Amino acid sequence: MYKEIRIAGFGGQGVVLSANILGRAVSLYENGFATMTQSYGPEARGGAASASVVLSSEPVLYPYITKPDILVVMSQEAYTRFTPELKSEGILLVEEDLVKLDATSTRNKVFSIPATRFAEELGKKMILNVVMLGFLSAITGAAGPEACRKAVSDMVPSRFKDLNLQAFDKGFEFGRNLLTHGPAQPEHSTLETVETE
Image (cartoon, rainbow, N blue to C red; front, side, top):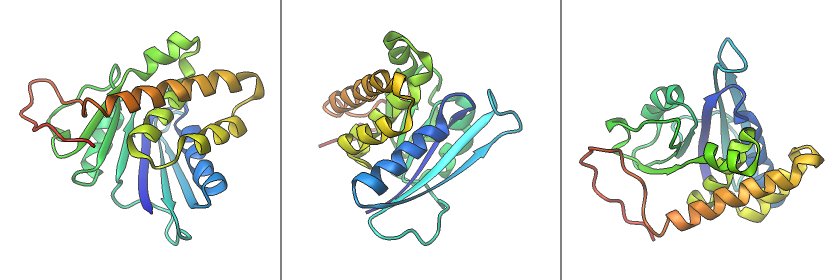
């Protein structure tokens, strides 16, 4: 197993935390290996933010990603900037209320989720990153749900643990259900439907 994953959005969305949780899930609870690097724009909150994770069944010799297999975007800027780097036939996960798709994503498998709305329904907008993490686990299988849930419990403040676990489960359930219907497609595009198992 070797996966290169980029999670991107803007500062304040918990981009780096979600990458940390993902790496922890694989390295501590699935006997794998992970590295994580991060990048911020000049402003911390509200500026561009991204984190890159390499997941592997063997020790990671080079910690940086070259062309991600999986891209998670939670802002329009992140979509515009990073989608061209995604591998052909890579998996693109988008926050559907914050990202408008265009022809850039025609070569990828695209899955959308209203993560912010789900987070707001659960009572805290800031947990959208954990909703996205659950979605990623369901769609890609990069890290299993139980390992992720344990990592979430490790990484968030104890008073918010139950809320974050609910957020993860919400994203995971949505992703699992979406797989039965296939990936989302940009409006007015000529994309062919991608078959899913």
